[in-house]
Length: 75
Image 1 (tube, rainbow, N blue to C red):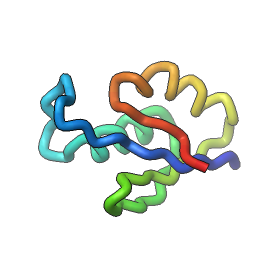
Image 2: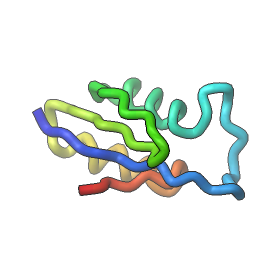
Image 3: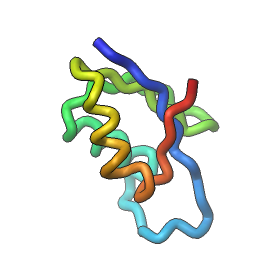
């Protein structure tokens, strides 16, 4: 199983109005819909730990959502 630490950037001028879940919750929901297993690490850095069986799954997710939600992989 492959794993990644993701950080959601919090911008004051986000182009979207996020639902009650907030930006991190919205990214978490998109990851779950995309087939990822999530380990919640909600803290001040907005970190999400995601796992998937295929290594290319994160590449596809980032191509689709990295710019929209300001998501990046942290090491």
